[in-house]
Amino acid sequence: QVQLEENGGGLVQAWGSLRLSCSASGPTTTRLAMGWFRQTPGRYRDFVAAVDWSGDNTYYGDSAKGRFTISRDGAKNTVFLQMTSLKPEDTAVYYCGASQCGEPNYYAPNAYDYWGQGTQVTVSS
Image (cartoon, rainbow, N blue to C red):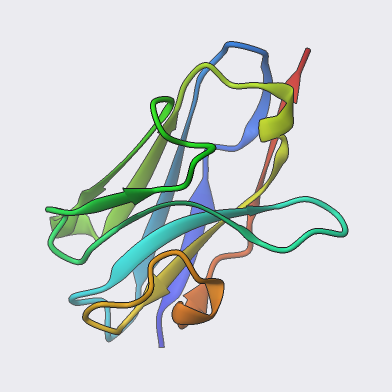
């Protein structure tokens, strides 16, 4: 089992920045691909960004390209999502996911085996 804990959400004004973190713990935390998704009421969980287990390869959804950066601290099994130039439409609950598959479909929520509880990000105009 893997436990994921997200931190860093909150309220920010438009064009501001936030940094989310997600820490993985448990007996099987090696070689985890990790990703961020977001969800608003009544909508599917949308892909934001992902990083492979090595940290060498990153993937971004269209909404994140050029504004968000995903990175990981492999030694601590922690992944970060640096969000800049935030817009009101970025308001959502952000979820961290982890996959034990070596090469998952990073863009699909069902490729992830574990999820955090989510952290609310609210961007005011």
